[in-house]
Image (cartoon, helix red, strand yellow):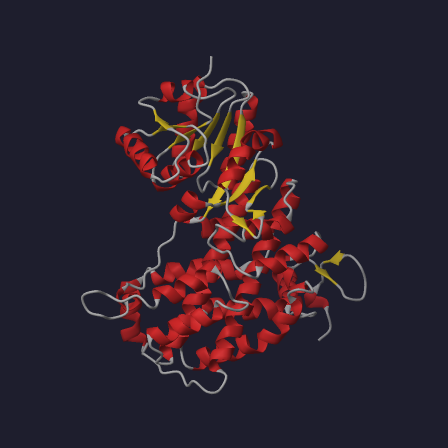
Length: 475
């Protein structure tokens, strides 16, 4: 005999607790377990305090009782840190599960780990879903963006619950099945990589404004205005709000009192490594990761500033400065989205996933961190042409790109001539210019490789690969 709970949640940290409350708030009975037994009691208290709470939360004191409290076939949402804790959680659950039970990993797991776990679970007759969840604590509680991967049957088992808790935007549900095994977690990893790039671009625009002598309040007004146009996004919105906030004690803008050391949890690195493995150019994502890594070397940077002559600069702000910053931000965002989507496209082909890129334009429009107006163009472009080689080629994007690109060029030139580091913006400019250049200087690289390593070259005037006898060629 099975229990009465519709779904179980293991791991009641910030995200697990918020998702449990969200599910229960839609009328489902939720079993809950955490090694810290007090977490279950606190969750029940929080659930009872919520207005409109309809579904009960049933804390369990041990894992066996937790599993027994679930309806069969069971559905369990695992919300524990990525890596070994997921494997440990599965090992603890396996002896208690029966054929056709489903486990959902809702953490930020590496997609290859998800592929491995899905295969191992299938051998036992169990279903496994890798679920990317974006939106942070607030999104988990009120409506996250959900990216599911795994057997279609496993997804269909939990789809009714996920549908009720997912974010909605303009009548569309920000939830989709994106393919087998690791597809959902891969898309979430790329989402985070784009998030890294977008945050770095915004930070560099802020740095240029600061170098131009602008006050935080003036910057806030500009970002708020931009958020009413084509740059509208969650990250631009919160940037405008952050810049208005002041320290209670000093009255100074709070952002000025925060150390310039950016932390990271690894998903940006995973996206960059995946791009290298799949042979997809994604320099914006990689550059954003490197920028965070460099920022973390605060003491070293301070010492280098003294030795190498780093100094504060004052940028000249001629006519069109703010318009160019706007266009630089837009071009950088277009470039990072293009790189991320090209990476997802390569992965779906390599792993034979059923990922629909147009659908990604929908599920990222609500709940998630990178929700932005630009995703309308993503949905439309890939809806019309699922095999679009690059977002920059789309009719919805190309005119915007060509109009904004000169502004990015002027911003990068201005920054370079005044010693202001803008690695993401410069990388985005190089990516776009490289992508639209029919003849790159890589022919010389091939000549060098063949010269020292006999790696062969391809001639422009005849087919095939050959090794040249460089010493024997006439000068």
